[in-house]
Length: 263
Image (cartoon, rainbow, N blue to C red):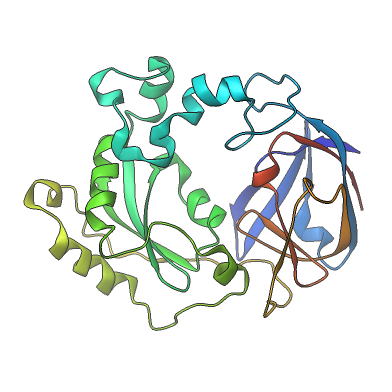
């Protein structure tokens, strides 16, 4: 079947369940673990925003024009401290009002290290699942994206803000991490004007992924280099498929790529 790739959807039960969408049809990928699948790139890439065919994908699935104009590709998506939606400034004020002038949370997530990040209230726990976190904990609740971004910047001297994808995929974790303790250490570092957004909630969410066995090394695959990718599906974590144990394919990285999917 032909599928235009988009971010894997996920739900959290005893472990994370992943689905791949094909229009109105969804495929539960967890059911395919242990089976051979093939993903063959047709050579066609669609812009995730305007749906035109593009020779190259920018950002997370945009044509060049949409990458420079779409609110989903605004600089504040990567750098939320640059958001100006609270000032009534943005690429699309209706979009900004719906997505940026809404409650945002600052959180700590654990893999091999402690990471600080932000997300909208509607993206919990999806955001943590997409990053492949072992566990996560909310540390602050803010009225908009900008304020959450300012808190994140204030904590970057003490916590990383990017996931080490190779360590995550190899399940290299620091079991000594205590997110509750890290949360209160973060509180001590916040300026007084930002400390007002700090929450006292100490609930840690632990996440388990459908992976048969974690590899010692991983080999990243890409449709830009290999049009035909196939093998036994041995696990899923974050937005990555594990094939044949140690080969990994980032589905979100290939948003808009049209493939033939067979299993």
